[in-house]
View (cartoon, rainbow, N blue to C red):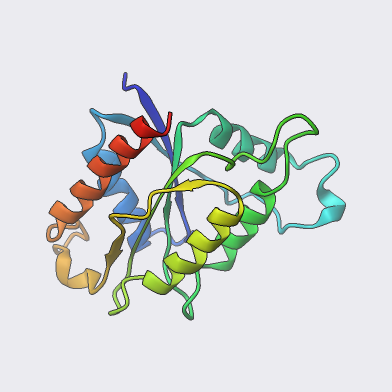
Length: 184
């Protein structure tokens, strides 16, 4: 198996999500270079301080997966010039330390951010906001290259597979592997 384990976090629960398709495309491309798991966080409750002790099992499971991974790759849609609320909710849970001795799981974790949209902005504004939160959490965010994939439907075949722009997707994936190597 590969040397690296990457957790992919998609900012949409929609079954036909374009960002899920992007994550799956990258997972397929990296199959010989890294283990890539798309995180299921659909059972994570809304953040509430009253629920922290004991931590809900779904939150503990997500934190453990991220803690054990070498890196995290976020795939965000853009809703009203921001990343989705479900992603912010997950980040609120992840921002909490595991214990007095173990910090929150994104601290010093190599991070990549991408986004795909049928619109023209390519998720650039949502990514800027997401990166701001990730920087606050002391994650190691790869700032370039960033993949802001606009007009997605023009880049897909009739089955919904991404067929145009793959060189940019592959370049970001290759650069992220190098980024992980530099940030071991």
